[in-house]
Image (cartoon, rainbow, N blue to C red):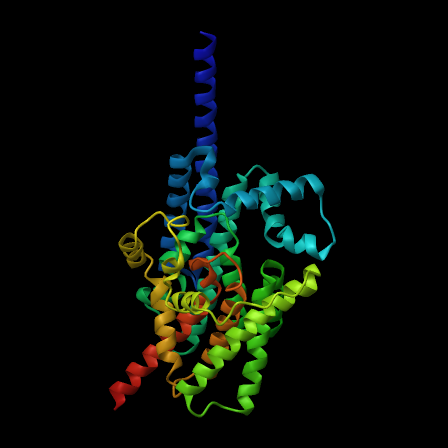
Length: 378
């Protein structure tokens, strides 16, 4: 009888916890619906996104229960650990602690958690808000180019991969928002704020953005003449610079012996081209990914933005007659430099490309639409 009573009590508590979680998810989804209202009407994409997000986080919670942090990525567990450290140890003014502890995203989650919201749900909510604002930044920029935004356009800057990641308690979409605003934002001061926030979230990404900006300033004075040949030379040089940047950064930060980066190897360049085409899984072993290559390719058909955006971006990059060709080159330089940095690490996934996918998608879309217009005129 005692054991049966314990089972009944535990089941009752689980149901109560699940009910509270569902209520919180619906409430946060309703908040997102409020953000979907623009110019006295509801944006179709944002409204659908709010509904899909609410449904998805509830389903994940139902399937995985209290262990829903184990779904897809162990980094969600890391976020919870960082939140607990923030609560237990308090705030430190050390820059290493601010960056390593991810204060910029943990602090807002702590506020929601303090008033009773599920911690992981709060992380997911701020991911979702980041996607929402990324969509607004990108769509506003596209509309400013006198382009009537269509629902299929959204696949190129806020598509399936972004929506999926918004249901996870990570930091990726906050980073995407920073990069998108840095390139497309209207307010100069906020663009610098976005750059600063990116430095707190992923410092080496910020280095890549600054490096590319400097290269972009140089190219304004010395425009490329033979674009394809020049781009090949720039790609090699920037990738190598990124690799050495990683080595030097580690040397100065950790005071270890300098280790030359492994750049001119088949593995390094195979990884580069796999990332460039959004096919990172081809570089993984079976110890990392259990699915077969055909299964992974089929999965890519659902997350079509993972490979479609980089490929379309490269296609438009090669045409220097299109508007924003200089910005495309700057974004490409930042992307290649970043790949040079991360090529020296053991970690690789679709998330490595993610910071640049929205800006790449916007520029690819504008390039495609302009090419169609030019073809129609001719």
